Figure: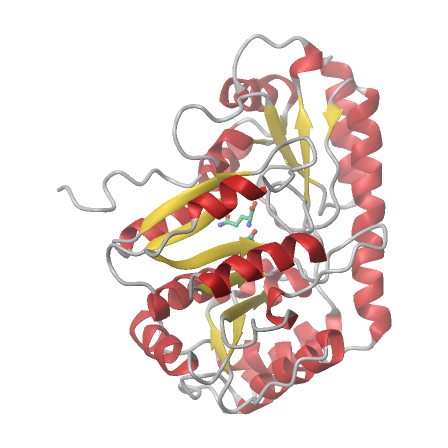
Amino acid sequence: MNNLLSSTGTTVFTVMSALAVQHGAINLGQGFPDYEGPQDVIRAAADALMDTRNQYPPLAGVPELRQAVADANRRFYGLEIDPAAEVIVTSGATEALIASLMAVVNPGDEVVVFEPFYDTYLPMVRLLGAVPKLVRLTPPKWELPRAELAAAFSDRTKAVLLNSPMNPAGKVFTSAELAYIAELVQRHDAYAICDEVYEHLTFDGWKHIPLMTLPGMRERCMRIGSAGKTFSLTGWKVGYITADRSLTPNIAKAHQNLTFTTAPNLQRAVALGLGKDDAYFAGLSAELQAKRDRLAKGLAELGFGVLPTQGSYFITTDFSPLGFHGDDVAFCRHLTETAKVTAIPVSAFYDGTDAPKHYARFAFCKNDAVLDEALARLTAWK
Ligand code: PMP
Ligand code: GLN
């Protein structure tokens, strides 16, 4: 059997998590917390299961959640959103990404994607028959190469896929960078699919700015959030798209033909979660910042080059100072098998063979005791 999927590999997260299990390794690869999300949100989901509203919810999402998403847009970013016409709930940000692409992209269109990218982006773009135009950010600060970005846009550009805060790079795009991107999007009459799943996970005073809040971008952006990240409940797979009413009919048709609806009890619980007080959101980022610092300090003491992380769950490290002979895939396998700690080779977030091969990504969304044990294992291994 040979079709468009035949050349798509198994995701690195599945490969590395299986390897971690096989070797009894601490999994700092796949980005999922090893602690539970807020108890009131979980309780709300359990209660909602028992309230006998377990049949198909409305296609666009339950009204409570659409309202909560609109309210959160106003509260955090000053965006005025009509909950009935400008919010679509999806089964995770993953579905939101493909639904947003389907809503605007035709076969042959070009989509600008930043490297390193979240691993589903390229397969998604290609499955739709569209053509990714890659723009590589420059490590270690992941700077935006402006001239290259401008050159990547053409009259065939339909969309740019922007992830901020960024996985795996931990970069938060600045307002100046966003303004540059916004100008290109408008000049080329394109759209922006904004993967903002880590919107509430920023550190050191960095603030996430949705591209949608920039002048002229309200009608051009599909802004994607995920309850998985905002409530540390990655298995729930509840995502939400905020988009102008001119775009939501197409997004809804994509959603209709992908999953149609999303579990109603989870939607109601997420609605409650989005209304939590400021202390919850401040606490979430403060806790993760402390975990980032804990892991970053330990890895630096071990001799890793630690790249800056302004947001997300991830630290990118340069392992070349350790003197390992081999590429990042070999390093992450070796680390799993011998140190019993798993990381993700960053070349998995690049296309082609000329990716940097000396970076490994570690997830810090883990209990402190687990991070300490991982560091202890690495110390003993070294
Ligand atoms: N986008 C990014 C950048 C991610 O890291 C992830 C994975 N956690 C997703 C999208 C997918 O989110 P979800 O689990 O809600 O589908
Ligand atoms: N987003 C998570 C990560 O980057 C993984 C999600 C998945 O396994 N698909 O590690």
